[in-house]
Amino acid sequence: MRVAVRDRRRVATCVGFGPRYLHSTGQAYKGGPATGVFLFVTAEPADPALDLAIPGQRATYGVVAGAQARGDMAVLRERGRRVLHVHLGADLRAELASLRRAVVEAVA
Image (tube, rainbow, N blue to C red; front, side, top):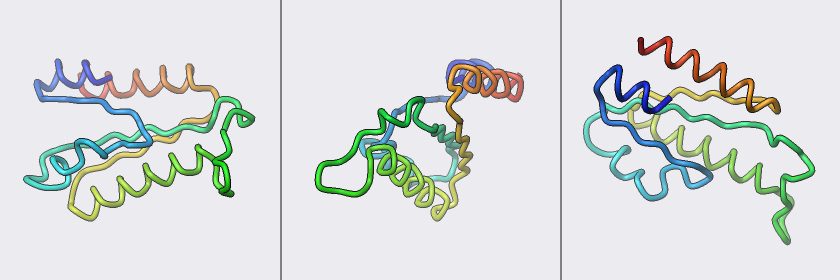
């Protein structure tokens, strides 16, 4: 998806993986001109039994990762950035393939 956007729109692109979505690069995106477009892709755990518990806490890793994504999206929106959030279900392969087709078609 990133390469399709880069090649077809001739713009700089980058990809990052959560839950630290904007931890290292967030200042660059939250400050300066509002020229970025951000696509957040989150998903349900493929196997809920693998959503690890955090020792001594009620929340699971998946809950924390989702909260981090929502927080980063909220900050970007508050600063006037264009943000799109796509939340995928458990059939990640099929849904990612569908999302990829949609993105490639949108930038064609």
